Image (tube, rainbow, N blue to C red):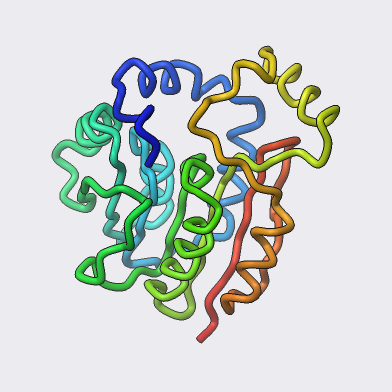
Length: 210
């Protein structure tokens, strides 16, 4: 992950505005609708403070989760959130590096506003690793920040966010949704689509049937 996220002030600034991201709850609700309630194991890539994984394990009463992040502050916040919860393990891991095989297989691999911080080539590799780590039938859900088609569309996004393009996080490495959806199909995911979108926020989903 980008070095910025190892800075506590940078990570804390994100957490302070996370709940105010427009329509975020709608994207999360759409994601949860695609998660099978009988999922037994869930992997959250770039878990932040554990917000998304907490929602997923709430829907999946028998699921055990693994939350991974590389930001010291985020790891601290996630451990605080899941303190005493024996169903969730919080692990330090940089998404720029391959997912460890010893973590085993999962029924759900999810992520929320994290993968756009890694280089494009690594994004594709990470999608392949997510596919390989999924048990069939399994689902990969990436609630993501993607690039706009034009500069005008980008500026409108930032206006709606109550900010300006110059405020964009320097660690962002944004890529259009269409390219990422094509990658998922090429890797072998089924039922691939953008299941929800609001401007530069998109929910990219692919399923592993076999």
